[in-house]
Length: 350
Ligand SMILES: [Zn+2]
Image 1 (cartoon, rainbow, N blue to C red):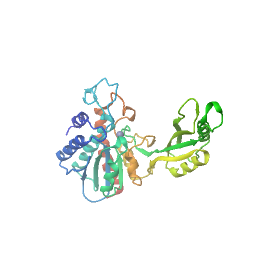
Image 2 (cartoon, helix red, strand yellow; image 1 turned 180 degrees about the vertical axis):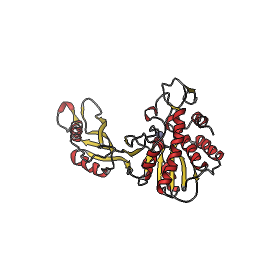
Image 3 (spheres, rainbow, N blue to C red; image 1 turned 45 degrees about the vertical axis):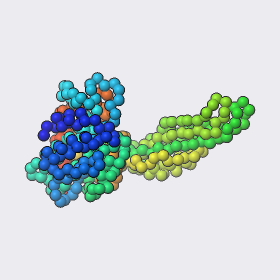
Image 4 (cartoon, protein in one colour; image 1 turned 90 degrees about the horizontal axis):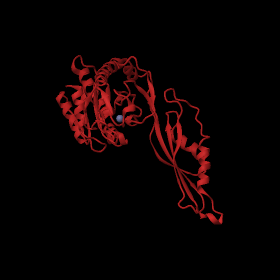
């Protein structure tokens, strides 16, 4: 099976989040052509290789963000130019899907490793929806996992989480001409400055410190009314060293407004760099250095399972016009996953 042709096929199939059916069917077809027994579960598709021994999950996603504006090539054209396949999803993450498929096929083609691999390609990653979360609930618990995202084949060993807070400052409305009232915008301004006093001292070896930013503010209705309400939105990027609850409590102590947690399910995750899966990823790409990733992915649904995030491509090309993946990068990706699978099972000594 030709990796570049399979990637081009997948890029030509539109698969924005929620519309992954046709892309999942194309993956299913490729799995069947490789002699596997694929299974479908909604818009997820998965297959097992090998029998008995530890279970390694290879996961990536079939969905993409919308094409958006600014393309000079057709976003679903899969045009090849200078050895690069152009199109939405080529880099994030259809290249990873193809490389995982053919890398696993290579690893099990002869002298198969003593262990089981589950290839699970899931939907709704770009909206952090139900794809991988529901697949994990159906599968036996993996002993280790790889999340395929464009990292230049370097293993991410930690990933920041996201905590979104709303802080509502309350005041008392009054006519601006008459004086009186309590200005909620002024109260919110005090809270914004108070958040600047929040400091973190536990630095994660791969991720450093959590970060916090006020990203939205909304208050007031008319120029002549003292506002009784002002709402702030705060984006916090967390590390495994702080539970979201701790940060929420600390914010609550600093501000006067009412703090409501909008989202805290996207927790930070990390993996011991000495673990077999990290060492296998490094053995598969000896030049690479483990690093901490600031961006979210479906890894959040694999909490507690030793996991690395690694794959061909460059995350800076994701979600941009003229997204592409080099055919050379794709071939490197295939060899990377093949070596990683072999190295992992050698290490866990199945
Ligand atoms: Zn992705």
